[in-house]
Amino acid sequence: MSDRKLFIDGKFCLGSGERFANINPATGAHLGFVEEAKAADVGRAVAAAKAALSGPWGRMPQAERLALLGAAAQGICDRFDDFLEAEVADTGKPLSWARKVDIPRGAANLQLFADITRNIANESYITDTPDGGKAINYAMRQPLGVVGVICPWNLPLLLMTWKVGPALAAGNTVVVKPSEETPSTATLLAEVMNDIGMPPGVYNVVHGFGPGSAGQALVQHKDVAAITFTGESSTGIAIMKDAAPTLKPLSFELGGKNPAIIFADADFDDAVAGTLRSSFSNCGQVCLCSERVYVERPIFERFVAAMKEGAEKLRYGAPMDEGTEMGPLISAQHRDKVLSYYQLARDEGANVVCGGGVPQLDDELSGGSWVEPTIITGLGDEARCVREEIFGPICHISPFDSEEEVIGRANDTEYGLCAAVWTGDLKRGHRMAAALDCGLVWLNSWFLRDLRTPFGGTGASGIGREGGIHSVNFYSELKNVCVKL
Ligand code: NAD
Image (cartoon, rainbow, N blue to C red; front, side, top):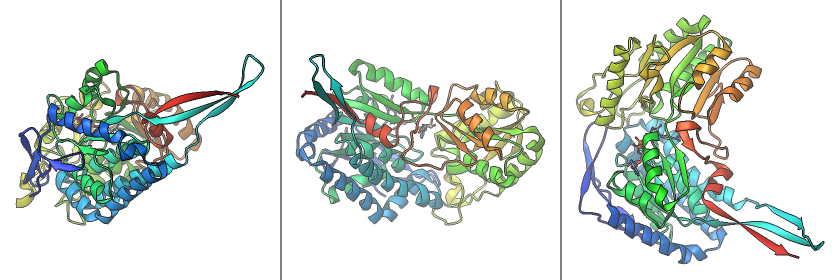
């Protein structure tokens, strides 16, 4: 049992007096209690973060600041197994996935943004002046101040450091609000921050929920200069309303209903393997997962059969077992939501190709939030299961006949996060990339990321771009300085 405390001004502390349970979703076991922060605790964290801006952190040379971020990245690597165990216990995701994705990327995010920030050049111009002389204009980057970082549960350490890395590299201080479902790795990172000598107040963690709790208090706080948020689109709307009175910049990475499009000329086996990954990885709980799969008619039946065979082979099991490929959903509540969509699919007239229920698992795992990977076909484009983000291991596969048709159907959504296109014709691939309304298109691949590239969505999938220089731009204030020569 590990209780998770708040981390404010370099110290672990209690919060509002209320606490909530941390549950292992693979077993339903109680992992420990989490201190809940309310407005007063968030106020203490923001005050500490604000004070740190004018303390040693604010005066620190850039090289030293970036070296501290590198040390934090190394600190995660040094305690790799602790982070791995905590992430797997909180999320139920298979060890094999967390070891390859969550924890290494958590460390890489901190190192990468230290490197990027070190190598940024700012713009400058020599300007002709009305008196026939010259002036130099140059841009200067300054921190925004205290940044509020609000995170989801699906990739807890990875998505948190994706924001904390560039925010700290730019000289800000942060107050992190991890998801109530996954409080542990943000808390472990606090231990690392103390171990490496990060000045108190630079990195703070407040646990709790959204409305009426830590999340809302952070958004509404007048001394929080910006909010960076990853989560559901509806939460983004609530945050935008709460942030309006204090006019904060917002960076939003939100939901998706992403298409995978498979042309008949694609490498069949690659497309099947890629679509199995893009539909079922992390139990379908990656914002980039494909929930709408469009397959060119000549290969439709064969593709559906191959997907069924692949989905039925996915191995569930204890997350810490090496052979496990499929974990549970994050919580009983989320399982109920996903199962309600499995039922809705039937009610809407879908053909359930495989899955659609709850798997039978042995004693220890029987209390977990398990569902079967599910493939459905036969729904029209207006069906709710084809339009709404389910965020579970389910995809709808439907046939298409022409490029033009599939572009129209893929774009017929309020979301616009990503798309995966599988084709042997690269010219067509580039045409498709230009025609799809979304922030990121994968050709013949999925979830292959270069962290220097722009990442974000259009429409209900987000506002702004993070990644590389785009993150640096969000987390810094650009000031123009004009010098008359
Ligand atoms: P969520 O929106 O329910 O919660 C995310 C965070 O917001 C949590 O920490 C929660 O406590 C907090 N929160 C909730 N209401 C709030 C409020 N009113 N004010 C302030 N904070 C509030 O999302 P989730 O269920 O944790 O995550 C799943 C969602 O995240 C899916 O929709 C998924 O697509 C999306 N997601 C998007 C990306 C991306 O990069 N676009 C990445 C991962 C997940």
